[in-house]
Image 1 (cartoon, helix red, strand yellow):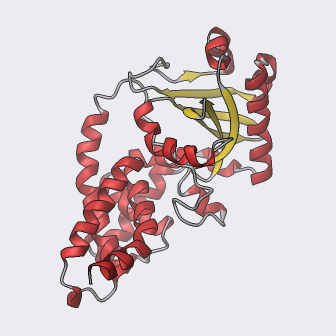
Image 2 (tube, helix red, strand yellow):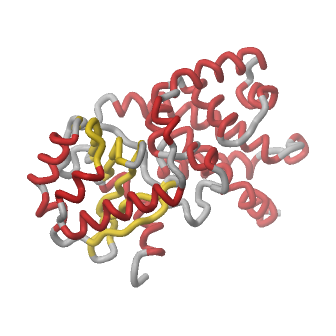
Length: 299
């Protein structure tokens, strides 16, 4: 009986992990939430669970809502910009990525924007946008009225709307631009890097006080280039670079001796890079580091 319970849960686990990650922006915390959900699942009365997927979605969502409040309190004390933990997605860790909508729903840029929402708004938005739940089903998950869920969804959509959403490039163009950035970084070609940046580019670095990183966003091509020029040797020395799919989009990964050192995500606009988000906090690379160990060159 125990093995049957575990096997049934395993069939739902990827979807539940994807839900938890979108709600929390942390792969490590998402794994903890899914494990807590399994403990409740394994001890639940099977006779009252008509639809296991819906039951688990409700449990995971509520576990995450409880975690969001404490997580945000910790982020108020966070050193420098806070960015979500990166996740390699070519292995299906966050669910299918066949459509632009599915990719956008897990993009680093959107996860940052979701921080603007209240926990309940975020839950409604994620369930609706990423998992296609109807408002009636969302109401059942959250214990709210259908009308309230509709209102929360409208409010969430308005709060995460950005002009950049109108300029989502084709997948091939995204990869070409990121590969150009990687080539320039690998060669230390600062002039080449400069050509790839929008005039109003913004650069965020998440070191969490654990490693050296800019503690404020850098705004403007000239400012970013001064930063890159000043750290060119550190940025290049001893590191290898590659392109990989992270959070549904091409990203730069920097590594040394097959150990993940940094993940760089991009927001593109009209053929140039408008936003750069760099995660170098080693604590935030634990989950992605385990993934990278399986796909790294020579693995």
